[in-house]
Image (cartoon, rainbow, N blue to C red; front, side):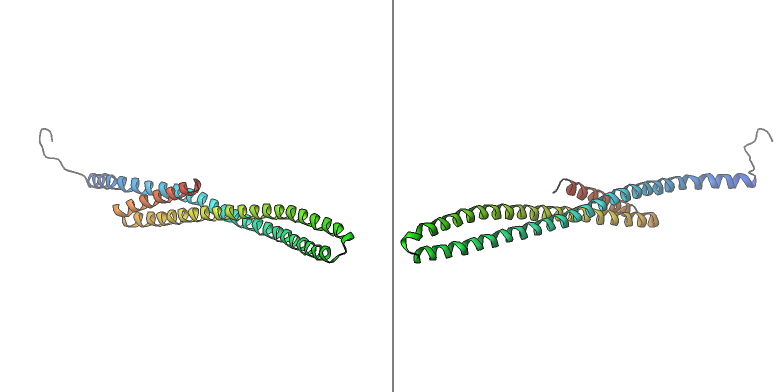
Length: 196
């Protein structure tokens, strides 16, 4: 039939046309699926790194707290030594005061020696106490950083859960929440890295 505007479709033409229209709709859907899958993979990787950092800072905090306890014990030992010297000094002072005049100089020498030794011991004890305080401060800083890493990891896990919900519901607000929580999680990880 030539020259007419009448055209008859074969059965396969209709199916081909239907498949072409459906593929156009799936293309957008596949793009969304790929975008969410890529986002989930990236966020899961970042979350794994944050989780490792959180564990490392928690281990460091425990180690630093242990070092502080060791230093506190060392300082306590020094203060006990200081107290022993104080007791000896007190006994030497009593002995000096009760001794005959010819023996007082010998006891005074002991009093002076104990005073000097006490001052040296006190300086060592105070130095060790300062070291213990420094270890405590470092431990506290690590625990603060650990909490930031844990917060970041938790928010990223929520973001991954929202990604699954976004895939199932195909709702834009859920997708926005997914991206927003992912950004918050990364920001918290940056805060942990910067010790904020």
